[in-house]
Image (cartoon, rainbow, N blue to C red; front, side, top):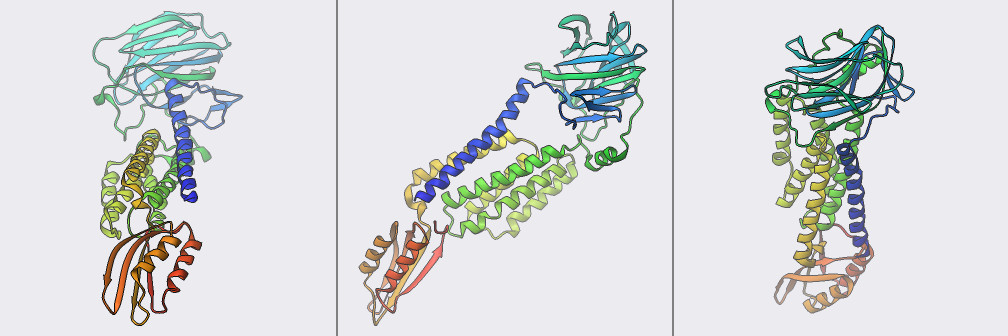
Length: 447
């Protein structure tokens, strides 16, 4: 019993740790955490060769760009900018998708808000300014319900508006042209509350991002280009770090599920052996979803692949099938990068299982089926068998008995604390008679 309590506490502790580990990044993202470019690797960005992280800033040379992938609509983008040089242009482009997109262009003497429709730019608003100072400057660009606002050092300098319905959502990025070099730091995108992009305007998953209006398409060469091509898919580029984290979480969640099934399940089969399959099933499903999530054709093929679990696996009881589908569900959730909803669902279902187990009482704790039979000469008395089991088990229950003058056969549900108690009970039963026959059927495992 002490071992079981430790296992239960272990499951609860792991769940609390995983919930905290999963929830913190999600809530932090909602509140907004600036990208300070302290790491060399840019996660979620597409960059040209001369857009690199150096000395804690994103440095972009002339004729280069850095694009933050995503579907952004109605947002505030803030960043610190330092531009050196006088002959050239820097622009911040956003809503880069299938339809219209926008750009805020910083010329040496003016700022322009521009709309690009079918490759044709049109000016929404413009204003004069003093140009690039070569010092760090705070920029804030807000796009809300077709109203575009530019603020420099917290002071609004330009506003542009347009009529009609919202057109598009998409990625955003920095573009540098001419003789300029630019550095960026403390990049933060904050969604505006209650804003939802129009469903019909979202870019198809197979669509490529349209190039900048004044920038030539760039290709990443060398090792970086090879890795980019290797990890490319029909949707956004696959982030290897995210995929690795989700695979590790899938293994951890599957282990938690296996412990729950072993200790709180009620199937008659060997639950330890059956639960050992959960990790492989969950990790494999996560891997499959990571691969096929950007392809409808492959996703439909997944339905046929998962049907193998139902029609080719040796499922003896409905409970086994329920746990298998739960393991697959965990894999699908993590494969689609839905960490928070997956861990919350796991915690909720474990709570429901625990409550159901308490309501059912201790009957589910029986871990062995025992059958005792004896015949003349040396036929044992049924009362002696029951007394022996009560002394040498944690609990026992007589389920069936068949007895006549020559033979007696009785079936019990029993629970042992550990293997030593099991061996002691077997020895005590064998001492009752030389003709006694004992059969044990493992339901969950001892200990």
